[in-house]
Length: 108
Image 1 (cartoon, rainbow, N blue to C red):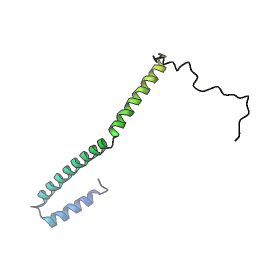
Image 2 (cartoon, helix red, strand yellow; image 1 turned 120 degrees about the vertical axis):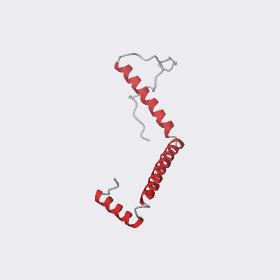
Image 3 (tube, helix red, strand yellow; image 1 turned 135 degrees about the vertical axis):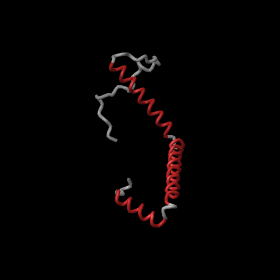
Image 4 (tube, rainbow, N blue to C red; image 1 turned 30 degrees about the vertical axis):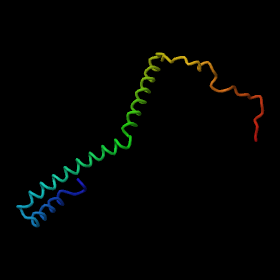
């Protein structure tokens, strides 16, 4: 815990007991504990607020949708099932014009 050994914790407690006295020490420990709990709650809320405001939540949802789509396509390919793709008329058209290898390339 924080790189402090057990003997160092005991030494700190003994010094605190001598400085503060046995009557005030439990009250101070309770106040420190409440402060630590409140600080952790504040840090957690701040982290959630920054996460929501920065748009990471939407990016995470989009990532999950893409992963799910990838898994569905992968499963369809592995099971040899065909995916129904609507015919838009672009399937029969060439994607790239034919290359003419008979011509010499233009250098400039």
